[in-house]
Image 1 (cartoon, rainbow, N blue to C red):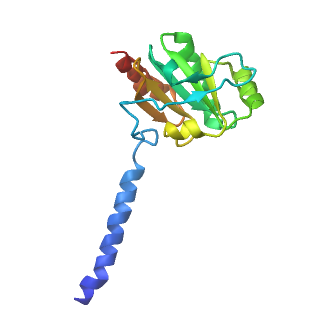
Image 2 (image 1 turned 45 degrees about the vertical axis):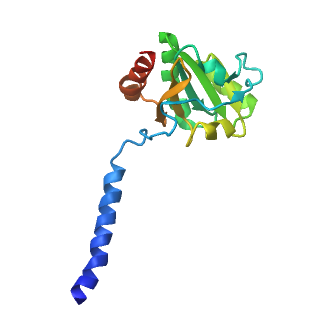
Amino acid sequence: MRYVLFGLPLILLVALVAVFALSMDRDPGLVRSVLIDKPAPQFSLAEVEGLGVPGFDTASLKGDVTVVNVFASWCIPCRDEHPLLMALKDTGGVRLFGINQSDAPENARAFLEELGNPYMAVGSDRDRRVSIDWGVYGVPETFVVDADGVITFKHVGPLTPDTLRSQLLPAIEQARS
């Protein structure tokens, strides 16, 4: 009996370590969102002052497939994924909107002036309220919204050439059908 009482905590510890080890092997960009297949939250974001593109709201997501990218000038991974967003803009065929999170307007402008502005609209979310409503964990995050305003896809973290090709572009095509 003594061996059983001694061995039980050890067995539980080994089981917990195995569970944690197996969950570390998962794709960090694959985070299930409760908003998938639900309408985008009600929101209205003002433009980033001096940027030259409008802000946007829930109603502007309807009518065509839209990619919504949450970014910030202080976000290093946002800088890394930015060339892919520029390439997505250049290929055409999809609207690209940005939610600028927790940024001063002058910093957002400088970021997009330096790297190029791929967005048709950029909303300023200085207090992160809209980001919270969208279920954003951190920047960058990218969503696909279908023509009915329903969120159909979410990618957490920076886009890479592989995730663009294997996840985002197929999600855009699926949202069109």
